[in-house]
Image (cartoon, rainbow, N blue to C red; front, side, top):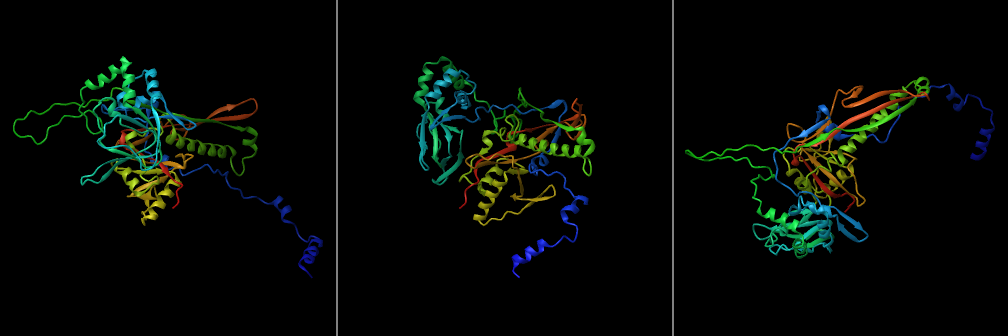
Amino acid sequence: MSVGEEIRTAESRPQQSLGTAAARNLATTTKSTPQMQEISSRWLLRALPWVQVQGGAYRVNRRLSYSVGDGRVTFVKTGERVEVIPAELGELPPLRDFEDIEVLTELARRCEQREFAPGEVLAHFGSPSDEVFLLAHGRAAKIGSGPYGDDAKLGVVGDGSYFGEAGLVDPEAIWEYSVRAVTTCTVLVLPLGSFQQVVERTPALQAHLEQLRTMPNQRTNKYGEKEIDLSAGHVGEADIPSTFVDYDASPREYELSVAQTVLRIHTRVADLYNQPMNQTEQQLRLTVEALKERQEHELVNNREFGLLANCEYDQRLQPHDGVPSPDDMDELLSRRRGSKLFLAHPRAIAAFGRECNKRGLYPEPVMFDGHQVPGWRGVPILPCNKIPISEARTTSILCMRTGEDEAGVIGLRQAGIPDEIEPSLSVRFMGINEQAIMSYLVTAYYSAAVLVPDALGVLENVEIGRWR
């Protein structure tokens, strides 16, 4: 008998026992709790030291600082044409606090767009500084002279950087370093001659520049803070300087942000379908999970208090070769004392691992909060999928010192709010409407603060798609 004949014979036989489909009607089904793909490890929420904020605001008092013009220039792109936003020219130190938008617009129009291929030199050491460069796209290296006459790389600049602005105030200024394109660069160049033509026709700009030239140099430390006068190594009856510590007269205040939603549940569902799992509890559990995911996203990406937006420009680094190399991670670590953690997208961590593999390096994992995580130089590298990845497949890696006592990065919240289920997170019953639907207001209050600029650094434009 063939296999086909056996199957037909089995199908023709009368059923001799209860089938599984019918038996399931009398069986108890074992069920899981509702699952959710959005839930992540949320390492940032666990790693930040949370500070209790009474009154809903936290004020960061700092020493008076004279450093200005440390921002980033923003551009708009129309097809192949790139233009600088006129108001963004105010980020250049010589144009800081100059607010005549018509004059800034005229200066923006006089910027010339140029393209540089990898290896081309934008500016030569020792030549007159007669052009201001605004780097719209690409990476360029600042090259200085080493102690034995060889080239020394002083740093890498990326999108939004500017250099050569000293010539706007001092016509005799010269380039103190060379600038060489690392990748294809799109640059807007403002010739000093064009700038002087605008200055000659604009008394307000003349007065602004003259004020900069005549302003006495403030004594500051290397961080731009007003220097505290001290005397050391003296003998005899030397005059000891007197001093005081001046404070910033307009300190920044961080107000607690909020994430909220209204959860609605029909009373019939809550009354009749509560076994073996409570419907209201499960609805609230998943809602709270989504709220925490949004909270971490805001702590990273919010334009007001998010970590990516609040990192100072001089703490932003560019990778030397595009990919996140051990050298870049070392450079990121060297910019601050007591770094407590790296924060990176999982794909950036994988890209860093590939670079380590190429060099035969195998970093030892470290323990953090009872878990074994990747590390570098003993500092944990924590994954965070809230760090964005651009269309060009680039992302950022953050490095931070944490804690209020360490003048680091801190999280802000207010515990003890009404109907609290977790610190600074509440679930408040709002009543039942005429359609018998119950409503719960789910609220989380939070923010983050960077107490001093060097507490947070970012390695930007990290390539994660290079495999070779």
